[in-house]
Length: 138
Image (cartoon, rainbow, N blue to C red; front, side, top):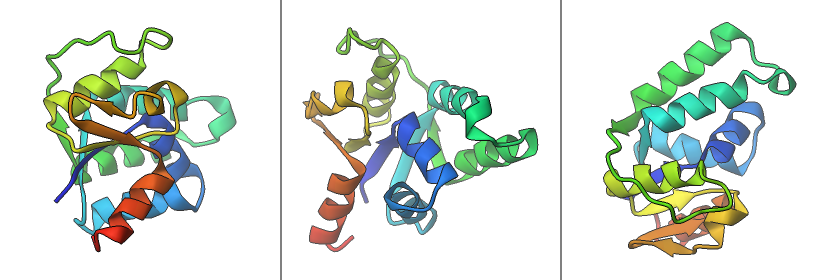
């Protein structure tokens, strides 16, 4: 089973609207994929969904973070990378994936997607991940 780190932008998209990101997250709930995350990424996710434009109340935020903790494997991050200089926060996605022995990072972020692969971890868009899963009958 593939181990996958979801960038915060993918998780937020899965939360706020129906579509491909939510479809991919459902595969985690169905145990077709292993979601790997960290306290760092969950904290960033919580901070983003607290923004007024997201329009999610405090109870929904708590439920979402709790649900993610239930379906994901939360790993301790000890690695430090500076592979993405243009947006230092993207490095925590790489660090989580590396320390969590992930096979894929799924992101909508051009800084990460432009890397294509990092230390053996494939960096793909939601669309690419869904196509890969379809091709491999997962």
